[in-house]
Image 1: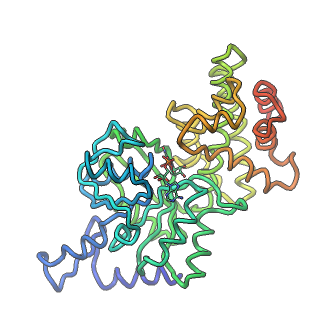
Image 2: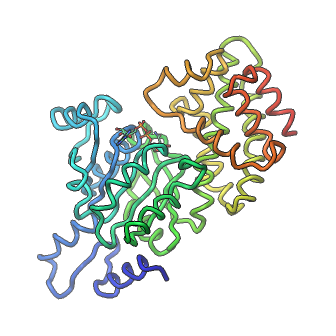
Image 3: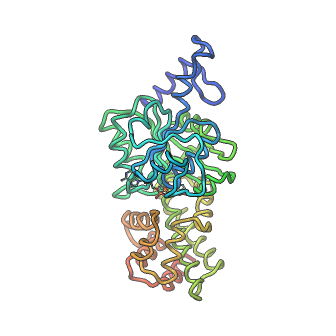
Length: 371
Ligand SMILES: NC(=O)c1ccc[n+]([C@@H]2O[C@H](COP(=O)([O-])OP(=O)(O)OC[C@H]3O[C@@H](n4cnc5c(N)ncnc54)[C@H](O)[C@@H]3O)[C@@H](O)[C@H]2O)c1
């Protein structure tokens, strides 16, 4: 048992849990429980971009106290002044959401600290958060991508915690959770996993709402790897959409062929990297892949669409304020290969991103090399 799980079970044995996982101190009676309820229930959401705002809206709408943190003055001002995040989410009000630009204030007394930040940013924020963490607070990594060097984000966070002498648990959550739909109340599912399954199970219960069903999974490595790899496939699927716009080879038949080739390669490659096969067939695997590759909101699909319609990578990335983690993930998975033949889908897509293949050549190779 790890130190963090020990701390968790110590709390559980001291205070019985009610059905929501709220700490109830029976000695003090019902009337005095508010401070402890607040402690366990409060969710800090770090990063109020698309996903952070959607999660914060869903949770706060359903009565969970959420304290969001942003570095962006514009985001802070518009939420305080008009109750709307005008930069990322103009169409949605955010009733009940507390917002701050002070990291310590957001994290203080939160049971869960959700990291709604892109994979290339999350570790620098973790560096700043660590000093504010108390024992028992769980870090929930939401980034779908890999850390520098192709390392898992959760592993890199663990290393930082270890170096700081902290033993907080790190959980990961992924699934088909496109932000505008989650915010709008579309019934959405996700998986949460942690090395300590009891913590994953508790989080799934605490973070589920009537429109957001979270289940716990026992394969944290697998769900994190799929969270990153599905962006690679979605990027390639988007190229089919782009090719169809310019009268090329693109269309749903081609997209399905690319989807199949990428999924097959993902099953083999991620299996070799240690992911459980069953995760490929879960909401975190094929579920997330489906929505990312087909939804008009999917930014990796959109980047692929721009490439397919004839833009180069620089132009495609320059036309959105949102990050496209599939580009980074493609390069990072390619770097982890011993030989290019090990993962022809990844190496072909990387060649296209590097300008060595035109979109049309790329999609032909993606499906021909993966028959
Ligand atoms: N958008 C979705 O539908 C969705 C769904 C599930 C998971 N995710 C994952 O969630 C993560 C965040 O995605 P997003 O869509 O919210 O991205 P986004 O681009 O909309 O928002 C990024 C957020 O990061 C913050 N940020 C950027 N640089 C920062 C820095 N140096 N310091 C502090 N904060 C900084 C921004 O202020 C913003 O709040 C990604 O890993 C993504 O894969 C997104």
